[in-house]
Image (cartoon, rainbow, N blue to C red; front, side, top):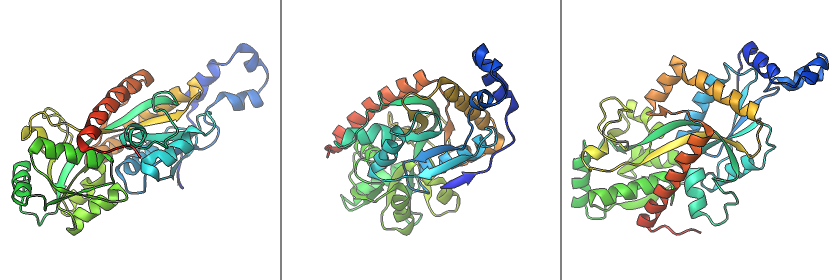
Length: 335
C-alpha cells in the first residue's frame, strides 16, 4: 500500500456536512455527534484492480495525490491485480459500504471481465454505486522505433507485406489492448500475430524490447516511454476532432470511423452514504482543477471527464454494447 499525505482539514466541508444533520443530533453535544458528522474520519482507500505501472494505476496515483490535498484524511492506494481486474473489483464490491473503500474502475474490470469470465460474481450495472467518471483514455498506437514505419499508413503496409508474421502485443486475451488491436486490424485490412502478456506494462515492454512490433494500448501505459524515445507514437484512437495528445493524429484520419476509447471511473460498494459520494465528487472536482494534476493527465493522454452518477451509468451501458461487438469480431469466448 502507498499512503498519500493529506492536507489540513477542509473546514468548509465539515460545516456543510454538519448543517445537514437533524437538529437533535446537533443538540447532543460536541462529542460523538460531531465525530459522526464530518466525513471522512479515517483514511480513504482506492482499490486498484491492476498491477503497478499500468495505465489505471498511473492515473489513480495522480488523482489520489491531488485529492489528498483537499480531503481531511489520507488516500491509500491498494493494488489488487488478478483475473483481468475482477479480483480487486470483487474485493471492493464486498467491502463495507461506508465510503472508505472505493474502486478504481475501468473498461477492463467493469466492462470486459464480466463479458468474458463466467466466474465473475458481480453485475457492473447493479452491484455498485457510481461516484464519478475520472477520465477518458485514448488508446495510442505505438511501435518499436527500429520498425520502418512512421505513421498508420506505413504500419498497415508493413503488416500486409509480412503476411501474418508481424506481431501485436496485448495485456492478455480479451484485454482492452487485445480488442482494440483486433479492431484496428479489421479496419486496416491486415493481420498480425497476437502475443498476449500478463498485463499492460509487460505488453508495452515487449514492444520496447523488440519482441513484438506494435501495440494499441491505453495512453498512460505508453506515453512516458514515447517521451523517452523508447517507443514511436503513430496515432490515437479518439475521434479526429479530439486532440488529447497535441498534434498527434487520430487513427481515424487514416482509417475513417475507427474509434476505441478507454475510461477510468470511481465506483463504490452498493449503499454508500450520499454525503460521502457528494464529498468525493467535490474533492475530485477540486483535484482536477489543480494545474499540476491536469499537466500530469495531459502528459499521459488522459482527458479529465467528471460526471454525475447517472451520467456515469449511462456511459457504461453504451460501453458494454461496444465491447460486446468487439468481442464478437475478435472471436473470444467466455471462459
